[in-house]
Length: 147
Image (cartoon, rainbow, N blue to C red; front, side, top):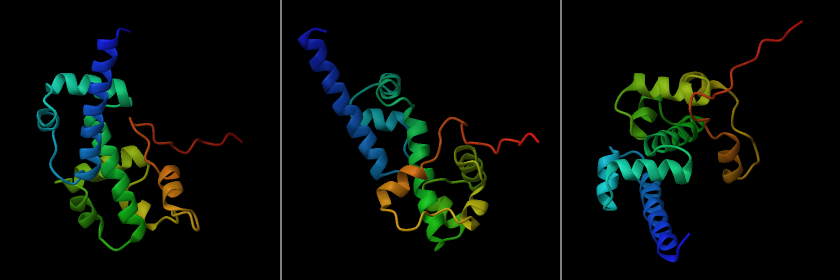
């Protein structure tokens, strides 16, 4: 890799980190790839390709994961209704929120809220890591037991 290529790659990674940080901060805002790309002076296609290459998922998938992670935290606290959580994390449709939540977590938000899912006595960073939603329809389904 030449020096100029390496410098360009580092520059692109810095821009991608800015995009990721913006999604982490503004996850509840209506964000789209075009708007995110415009903010760092890249084309939407280039941003999507490079983001997936750097982080292993598209900007949309990353944003959905952040929203679901935040929803999980709000549901564990049980201060808001499922509908209030849905809107607080940036979804505009309860149906979309519920189906996406179920897809990533493996259980509907109302069931998740009722389950004893919050590890007790663990630091927040550990709780976040072990309760992190699984991406790309990979939520674990209970495996049938063979007798």
